[in-house]
Length: 303
Image 1: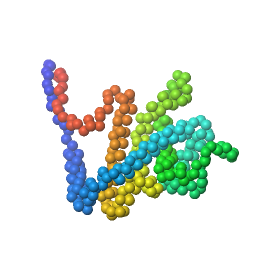
Image 2 (image 1 turned 120 degrees about the horizontal axis):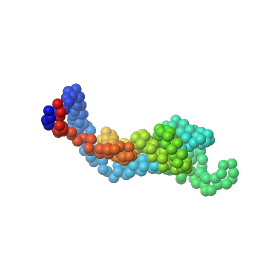
Image 3 (image 1 turned 45 degrees about the vertical axis):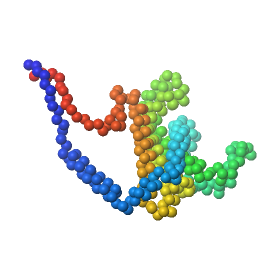
Image 4 (image 1 turned 90 degrees about the horizontal axis):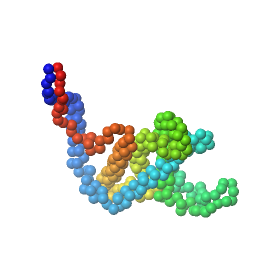
């Protein structure tokens, strides 16, 4: 006996999940009400300063520090990771010592030492050690100003963490890939940059973006150099106006905007890197929130 029917698909019920969602919405509504309708938050002051040219100039400095610190730390971190994996005990030992040193020192300590480097050395020069040969002499106080010191300090510390992230990603690649690339007769440099690193990127990217987001927030530490980045600029304003909370909220929202944009970029970079590992493309971020409704028609049913 054969017959065709269309069965109605009834979604499963999750009462505890519904109760949890309603409780969460209740808490969220209470928080929104307390923030939106409490006059002590001074939202008019927040709106007054949010797009102020002084704040935007500090924001520009923060973004520039994040960009340069990220680029230089990726370049230096990649070199350190490859040196750490090198069969040469000298390269591996030097890379390990660098990573050990700058992962041990707080960023604020590195920044203050660099900013006071002129106390230790009046001039900086490039030459051959233990000889009189040198090319150029520069006054330390002119070379290590506020912005160069901030970029160098962020790069030195961040590259130590980036090196370990990249090294872990390379070690996570299946050893058979190394052997296959070697069997094809590819030189070591081409094996690394064309075969191994592209595969390691899928494991590196999530943690690397996490470090970049931490770096974006960590730029606030350069206020110890009296450099007018976002946080230092906000400090100077609220020290003058005594409007502490609304101005701190200005900084908090701008940091939220920066980290949100970086998270969106991370999502699409991961999606692009995963295109060769999936038969079906991963849904875009906005598609994850589409409701799933409707009936599921079934084919012929035999009994």
